[in-house]
Length: 593
Image (cartoon, rainbow, N blue to C red; front, side, top):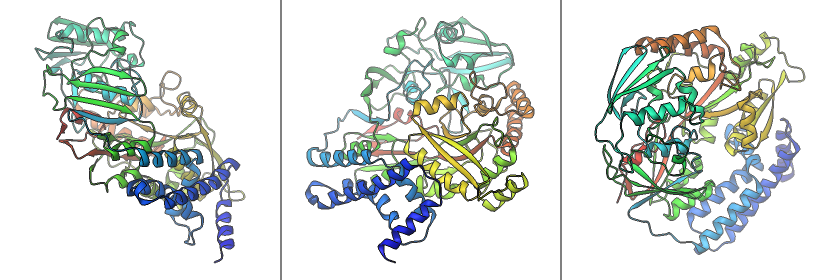
């Protein structure tokens, strides 16, 4: 086939799908910049560019250049690659080229500090007060600074923490017995008074925090002596223990208010040294820690927003660790580096797609079921995430004690999707049954997911219109329920079945709650209420199993996949054990050699 015919064939392929003019223009520009990148790098002398730098940029360039003029027939891999080119911004690629060339020419590996582990994070924590901070970095770094009454094991069950034991003499009373000889980083002893203050400061309105609602079932807290804390509840609430464990909240010194934000003082295995917003944050070992002491002298978290720069920092040896902070293709490239290790383990982070059930079309459960059948997860997991994800059947992860593996699933079946839509009265007119709008952020993987879903929906007669917004605008719209269809991730919040109350209880709709799709089912509400009041975990497990079966039938969410935890580290780091939650607890046992 001649070049002109090949180009025409590609053009006809793209014209099968609706595309905004700006996206089409982006695709053309991406081809030009991809070709520019390949030309520049091929002309550079080998001495100025090692294999790693060539691999990173050439792989990005070829991703766009090859599919555009390929003779091969359309395949899932080729289709995804074509869509991926829309997401590569020419300015981003040009800056990446300039950065890589500059670093290759003028930088050299910095000698590693033998006493400090350097870990890459994507952004600074917003608030290290464990009563306030909600973002991932605040919670994960906060777990190293503050202890909680309870901890969580690999199966997401609560275990002793500051409380060495506890008992529940009745469903409304929880009595915790604290470890002795625990001190804060400033030397003050940690007692029951500090525990009581931590929660009284929330419940009494002394501190403004969205976490206050989590403890709305607590009536009052008593501290009869230095090592006994008693929680009295207004009504039975079996989720209390989870909400007293690490990741949910940590214990602060008596009297601490907003001042702890600037200088966090906890009782955890590491103590706060310094922080520079959007630059770095430094912790050092707490030599007076009451539990097993860390091996690391210091941990320096460096903020690196750009994915390519993160890879370069690891490659140069100026950073030691990055957890879930690199693209799948970059991880595969770094795995070939002799000085680096790659570890992966099953994780709990859930990618999902959600519907607005107030929408006249999406309120029909048959439409939601048909859409679930129309989505093909396999090529998305294989080609976008390179196998670093597992198909999801529930909001809960498989590690949870309440997970139900026997619920109805929706394997890819476009023919069944078409039949369901026909039976529901949505027959195609000129190949289109109805339009659906998906809101996304500007994050590249999210835009790519939307583009692939657009193609898959088109195959069953649904025209998916994509609307891209800056992250703040996108999240604001999602939070208030201003959408038809969107995709996001649950990070940590889905590890306990209390998630069902958070996102599916009928009264927890915006602006007060996070049932953003306005889902309502009286049976679901009844199961949530019954499970919350029940203290027997076996009975709770059966209730939550039925709840997951109802949700699988109603499809308020399409559960897409669970992401693996992927950690890239220098070979001088040893004794790392990944936690399903993807937190930073591995730093408590890590060693430098």
